Length: 332
Image (cartoon, rainbow, N blue to C red; front, top):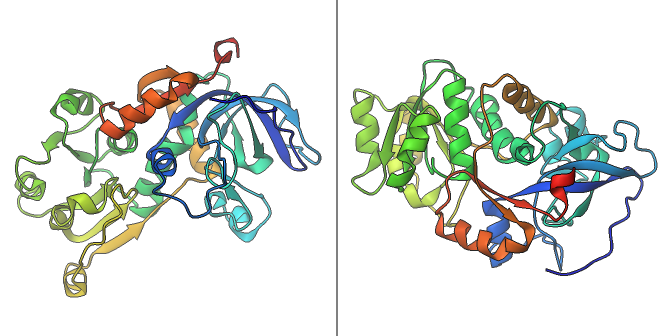
């Protein structure tokens, strides 16, 4: 921990007093030094931010002081073709919050006007830190990438983690049959409570055998993969004809070998999905307000306990997401 000046918002930027910031696996990889490309020297990590607007830079018109906001993953410009298309998470001019520019592991953070989304007064500001990532990321993977339909079978890998728990919950809320894959038996009850139809323990045998058993040897129409290479080829072997395999996460960075002929004859789709749009965050806020879903917070820690949070993330011992709470947040 260190003392730094409160940042000043520039044109089109907003100063936010941080209420809470989630500790994402992306933060773990940045701190560990695995992710390096585009990382700002001396970076303040953290992109899962909720807070209150304190000060407006020049030209800001859509927000006002005192407004409750959450951050997108990117400090978007709001003007490029991708922002105008509703793809703010891939803004051509934006920088990743907590990656290319300072993030929310602090009391204050500066984010672009279009990198923030105002949220309703009725939702809890602390847990709203998770509205974009992981909740919005999961929703975008399910709806925009996989285009899930009610009644379809969805396999979720890494189901006990921050991204996985919310994917399980959202898939169930969207009317899907959810097979949750986890290596942690102690997380099985929580996953069932979140809507998993079956909890499959990875490691006892290839979980693809269990998926096939539960689907009468047909496989799953959709796989939402939050883990990546470490579970291949069992992930691939779980996929049904015309199935969609959506990659949301990669924890190891290992290459895998895929036979193009198998993709062709299975009529399979292999899709990548990252980030979330403003529309997706607003949809999450709406679903939370309606009681359809909730933020799964495994542990709340003071910002000064960031080293403890890092250890818990590395051990993957917490179900759901860890939230870091800066000093004075309870007064917001």
